[in-house]
Length: 131
Image 1: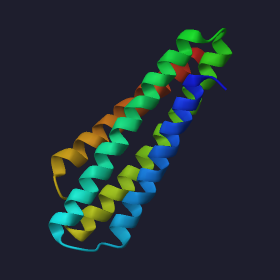
Image 2 (image 1 turned 180 degrees about the vertical axis):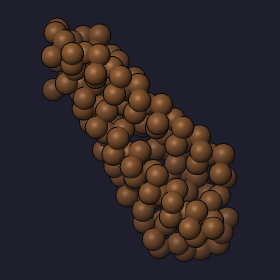
Image 3 (image 1 turned 90 degrees about the vertical axis):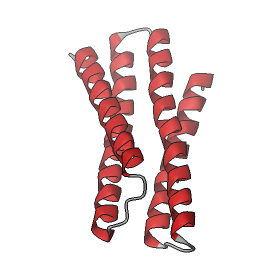
């Protein structure tokens, strides 16, 4: 396993852990409103850093790839991760909207926009290299 693969796997694991943490925070809110908002903000910002890392690592892996099939597989894997993250993020946003408690809506919109852009870019890279 290469260092890049290990880095990508660690980022993927961190994203999944942060997604689970967000689900836990939303399903078991405890403490004050300020504490809840801080916990949500911290989890979101952590998740964003890992979301961006996966993309950067994929770019580095692509630069080292030997053939188009390998490149397509790398982008497909990355796209699937972003698609799952996007689905979860939209679900999270819906839950928060329904509860009427979206702390820092700009941060939530920024996160949604970023994941959408990365999902779209990874899909386009995959489609280009798979053809």
